[in-house]
Image (cartoon, rainbow, N blue to C red; front, side, top):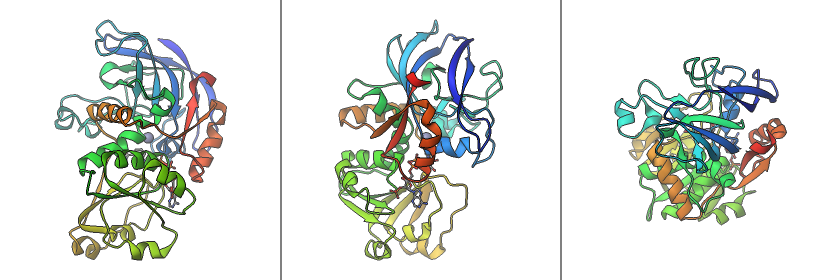
Length: 350
Ligand code: NAP
Ligand code: ZN
């Protein structure tokens, strides 16, 4: 066991406080990582505030982790001390089910182990659940530790470990590329990385944001078109326009209105995860053979593919670096959509 410093919240309405936590002894396949940066994902907020239910406290969120390898277990072959590495939303999976064998560990049938608030044995983590990246060190089995290529700063790479792959995976799955009209709803942490990746894949990219206040940034990230969803004319003018619509919004949306913007055989993919059910009219689906789907992060191999793609295309997240004592303030600003475009905690301040 080793001790690390972390920032934890102790109740749904609590404030973040510094806490000493235990990290497990290195097993043969384990990697000890000195965390340098941890991104703040909206899922951290949903969890810390128990908006999905089932949060165990004290809760240390953080699944956008970038750092350097500090030590490796005796059987580790994938990483060496000093390597630039990242950890995303998962730290383990069964490795044997259909999904894991297909490299889609995010859909592990018995259930993967999430980086925080994930069930583990008390030997793995005191308390029986995982503690995430808002901390100075983490221990993760080598198969779930990604390599961060040279050419991306560790700070701008951290958000790619969740936001990056969450967008990359559906863009690849639904073949975003030249000739495809892709719309991204919400240009926050996920959305802004999605704009960059979709544009780099060669798709025609449209942002659907609630106002035009971030339009110039959207164009700079590679969007070809930008519309305000607060303007009803947007919905009339864009009817049946898109092959693929990706919804990154963290709040409830009138999803049927957005479904009508899909062209024949188009798909709307849900990434944003507010807790309430969606409502879609059968006529909206049947009319143009439209599909409604969803997508959850991405597998480990695809996460590495995404990091390599981003390095090759010069893509990093746009970040605002904060000290750990400002996490509460950052959460409030994310919820108010006042983030440009991802808060990242400087782990040196933990
Ligand atoms: P974020 O940075 O807060 O971005 C969400 C964006 O949604 C905002 O920037 C805003 O964009 C828009 N928005 C927010 N509230 C809105 C409202 N009331 N009405 C209309 N638009 C609103 O959050 P994020 O970190 O990107 O995460 C987004 C969601 O994805 C969260 O629910 C998170 O839990 C989920 N998530 C899912 C996965 C997955 O694997 N499926 C992975 C990570 C995160 P505009 O200002 O441009 O309108
Ligand atoms: Zn996330």
